[in-house]
Image 1 (tube, rainbow over the protein chains, first blue to last red):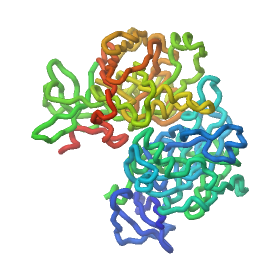
Image 2 (spheres, chains in turn purple, green):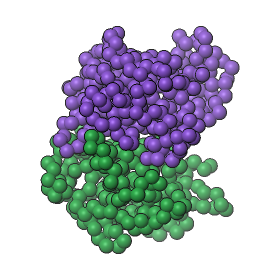
Image 3 (tube, rainbow over the protein chains, first blue to last red):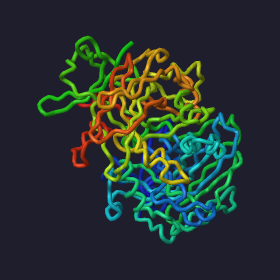
Image 4 (cartoon, each protein chain N blue to C red):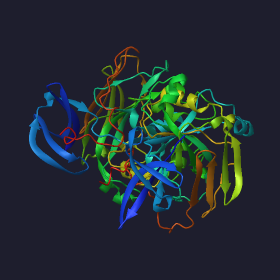
Length: 285
Length: 285
């Protein structure tokens, strides 16, 4: 199993994007395309010398609703026959440590949702469940942030894409774990250090390969795209300035803080990256 | 006013993507970035020598629901206080002449919706209505195709992104008109040559610059992104093999046919283009 990350390194005021695999005490640097035969450069970079980025740059995040038995039972909503999803746009992306920005136009409740994310490794369309594993690069943590008061503001149209699509509302990271076994793993979410979610991934209605297969019948998925598998019990709101950490054993902990004043400078390492491109160690050469 | 198009030219079995401006009898070729100071090459290409592509490659299509007074009245749904939208992913893109593919997994009704599309020219976030025109490159025609039977298949969650997000369900083109005046223009949609929609754009609830301003407060919009302004009366279903043409005076006519058998070879000139990138005359050099 490998843990892939993306990062920037700073030298002489110049920043350079790179990616690699976590090793004891550092990062084994790679170059090329993370999803297509990346090449090890032989260099090892100290973890303290980098600023983490989101581990990939999805062209979209496909986010599931109502995919856990426990939450479905609590909500009193039958589990769906097909994954129910919305699309978070590429510009919603945020990485580990990025500040989730309260939208300038929104004063209401902002909600965290700790989730497992599936990272697509190869373009896929109409793949079978049996074949789906060949199209998965690995797994990451997701905080699927929502401007909850907007969801049902209009009685005729649930505003899923709007409420969940704001810049920095799609937090992913810190790493992509390959060969991750979700069956015996929990998603643990803390709010300002207090545990709020701790639910087993085994409770999923549509397990990951079923999701990939079914969603690949709805749209072509691209390398780096993320499917957020939906959340379970314990969702709640983040006060301005609150810190949410989503941990999945074998992947790591994704930590993001909600901005604590509208005036706080925007810190977004990734939103400036063009949609669908993967910044690599090659980019700055 | 200019009409910008993208196209491929074929030479000796090699295809090359390009873009330019329609002129009498041909296309004045440009190179570089359509949205950032493109340079005229001085070459003029005969229109008969090119295969049209979608005029831009959006990272997403933001598609509005319930934005016309007439349709709102017919549906008996109050007009919204903010644009109601879903996101069609980059992979839903199709260009003029492309075949709309019936999804392999779907036997139900497929519906056309003729619409005006706004093409974003500059990255924009939180722009005012007064400033919005500076971020609009131009206007195009849209056929916002929908797998209608899926929309309300699940009683708990309207599946807008799924029903409208299939590959080839986001038809745009044939050109992008700059300095287009929507106020005195109609959208005319024909189904196999018979007029089915003919509605005035003046009936829009949120006019284009209001849409750009408001949606830019919900997400950062990127160059080439398209906002589909919503449709009005006359939406209907396309039988397999049917041809839909969406015409807007000053822009042109966008024609697409629905595949007439599942076995029909896929014809998709654009879906293979990476999300968010713009194929230009430079690409093949």
